Structure formats: C-alpha cells, structure tokens
Image (cartoon, rainbow, N blue to C red; front, side):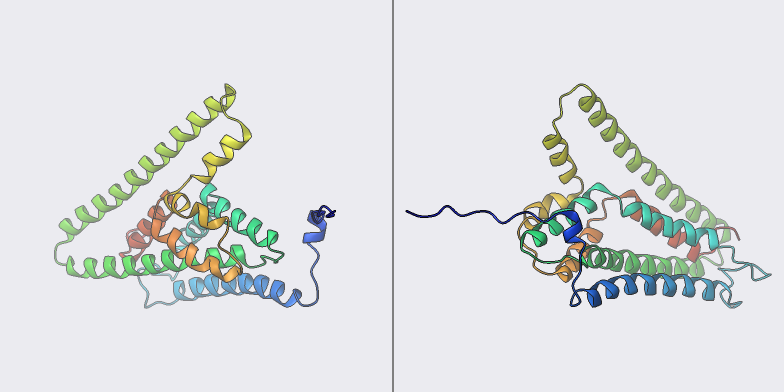
Length: 248
C-alpha cells in the first residue's frame, strides 16, 4: 500500500524575506546598483546643465532651466513603474521562481534595466535628430517655429488621446465591478491583459524563468511595445529640450 505524498508546507512572507549569507551579496548588489544609477543619472544631469557650452540647457546666467524637465522625466519613470502590465509581468515571473525554490532578488531590477535601455536609446536618438533638424532650419526661423509647435502639439494631443482611452477603460471596468459583473478572477485576468507585450508573453511568464537576468530581454520587449503615454511624453520632452524650446 503506497503512502500518499504530503505537499511541502508553503513558506510565509517572513520566511521568504529571510536571506542566507550566500544571498546577501546578491541583495546588496541589487540595492547598490539602484543607488549607483540614481547617483550617476542625477550627477550627469547636474553636471551637463552647469556647463556654459551647453547653451540649450542653461540660460545666460548658467541657471539650471531644465531642472524641472529632469524631475518631470524622473517622475514619469516612477509612475510608469506602476503600470498594471509591468506589475503583472514581474509578479508572474516572481511567483514562478518562488515555486521553483529560487530567490527572485533581481527580477524587478533586470526588467527595469531592459525597459530603460530602449527608452534611453530612443530619447537620445530623438534628441540628436531634433538638434540636427533645428540646425537645418536655422535660416528659416518662422518655418522652424511652426514645425516645432506643430510637433509639440501632435505629441500633446497623442498623450491626451491615450490618457482618454485609458480613462474610458477604467470607467467601464469600475461600472461593471460596481454592478457585480466582475469576480476577483475576472479582474485579475483583465489586468493580465493590459498592454500589448503582456498579452503576447503572458503564458511565458508562468513557466519560463529560472534566473532574474532573464527579465532583461523581457523589459527590452516591453520598451519596444511602446504602448504607454509615458514613453510618448518622455520622447516629446527629449525632442523639445534638444532644440531649446522649453524655458529658453
């Protein structure tokens, strides 16, 4: 007579938050990387804003006229981190790794690094392109001003339309949830379907991860998805700053 197998007891949250001596270096490495990137990013921002040769970044008195723009870009990133499709991707991957007995210490970090790689590359590319376009239009100030205003207006309208679509979707879900048409499982499925890349890779999140670094290419793909108003707004800000049309 065979003895029925007894499932292993589930670990509590407190047990998951306990780290061995072998895991502590990885934990401090993640925290140190985040701190280093913050110091590097803000340090470079202040440094380049203070150089007189970067006339498009400072005024005649070398005042940091783009300090507000930098803070806005940073706040864009903070808000973007709470998008439902991002949270769902990281949460599903974390659950898979925990089920396999692994500590997903760097899941969020590698996902954000992958995503940031694309956003940074696009921002730099658009900034250079906008600057070259401004030089080309130097002899056509009126035309250049019209084009610049038109591009800025296009980006602003696009951001507004995307936000309106999001608002309509939220209101629709809220009304259905208020009327009792949504169960908890239904709401969870709806959140899991937020975002193009999340729909495509939803099944992969549930089975395909063994190491935290594997979230880096996933973050890159989410960045290429370009399905949020945050990225559109950040790229518009990069282009505007490059040609010196903000706070000049």
